[in-house]
Amino acid sequence: MLAWQRKLGGISLSVMAAALLSACAQTSGAGAGADTGADAASVEGVAAMPAKLSNAVDASTAISALDTNKQLEGRLLSDYDLIKQVSSQISSVNIYDETMQPVNKKEKCLLPFMVNDSDGKMQLYWDGECKNGYASGLGRVVRALDGKKRTELLVEIDPQVKDTLVSYLRYDVNTGDSEVGYSIISLEDNKLVGSSATWGYNDQEWLNGTYEVTYRYEDTTNFVSYTRIFDLLSGEFSSIVAYPNFSHDLLNAHDNVLSNIDKTYRLLEGRSMIGLSYIWLKDGRLLMRDNASREDHLVIEHPKELDQYVQSIEDKVENQVKVIDSKADVGFAKIEEYSNKKCRQLNAFFRGDEVNYVCDYLFNVSNAYDDLMRAQEMRSHQIDTYRENQEQRLKQLEQVIKSFNKVHLSANQT
Image (cartoon, rainbow, N blue to C red):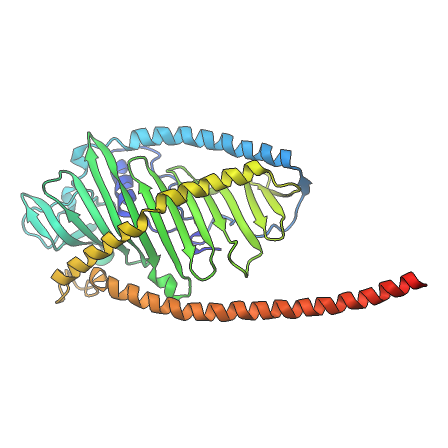
């Protein structure tokens, strides 16, 4: 099971800003369930093997169950349309928060889409330029709460492009989540527009041996995200399409030789599984869980319509994340540009800001690569051991079969 199935993952700058601004505009429902592909620990993972199968069902019953999911999805999409319509309406007065004036700047220097979401206790720091009362150029942003750093960002603001913020790096100090790439958010005709294409990982989880990378494309204009999360050692990957109020979650474990699960699918409203969830096992069985009755069923025949439906969701994610490698290169290039200008000497905003995560990011990613190579060697040894054990079991099985065969022949001769 991937780490996103165990804890709530980070959100990117664009989604964070959209959610905060929607709150300022007193909208309702926006972001109620949009966990950008992450799942909370309170959600029971569909990948867990069912303790008991109540009864077997045929393909027609499985197709009928799929129709139930589609009906639920239709209702959720109607709710999503209302959420999108309300949440996208943002007044221009809401995108510049006077309480987020950078603490380290004497002159007025507001940044767009930086909203104080902690009852006015959040403080902002900015090491870029200021022009005509607004931030300008490439610079590092630090968000701090009660004197403790929460988030570091590398952003760029073009004074010639009104009400627009471009982000290249976001690092969450508390969780260790980071995203690098190209994200843009702006206001046009009092509506939020933009997109975000990022590559990310969690350095704390890598230290604990969980080597996952996240590819995420967010259509900020339409409040939809497409996420692909790879476990680099096991070969498992998840594909998530997340709306503000529901999400499609798929897990593909086909290449994980140590798992008996081939793939899974579930539909979530907020953080609760609804409708029918499915588990494909590598021995060919298909299991179906009714999330209303909590009953598990064995599907005798695999309905082709179900495979096509799940594949179409996976294809949507694949098509959206194709652009991320090139966008991540843009983000890394901007980090290098900033580092060459600002990282030659320490420039801490306050006590507790001595570690500059933007300056250290390229170095930390390089170290993460070295850790991954060492972990890959250990994984290879683990797989080799597994295969050796399997071969030994096959030899034992062959010996048992020979013994049974002798008894069988003797019984037929008497």
